[in-house]
Image 1: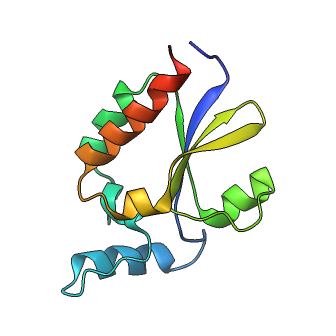
Image 2 (image 1 turned 180 degrees about the vertical axis):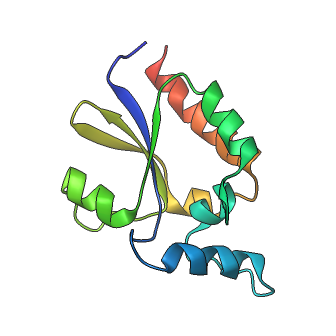
Length: 124
């Protein structure tokens, strides 16, 4: 197993704003138009969904969750498209799951399967 690998789940919202609360309520309301599909998929008003916590425990590498501005600041990437899932290997990052793919996902199970499938290339 690679020792320096970390999964990075990047939300399409900035930290410290009301975006997260707004996103959750948009996704739960009648219009169902979230600004961040990843956030709406795995987060509830009281925290991370239990099903997603179980999925994270099954991954063989640690995970981090970053708001878009945190990701940009830490990795100095200009205008990354989010939401997305990246894999960090030391100081480099590589995209595993694109925004289009996340936006097409409708369940935690689908997201988990896609991430696991993409991780397989790192553990052959």
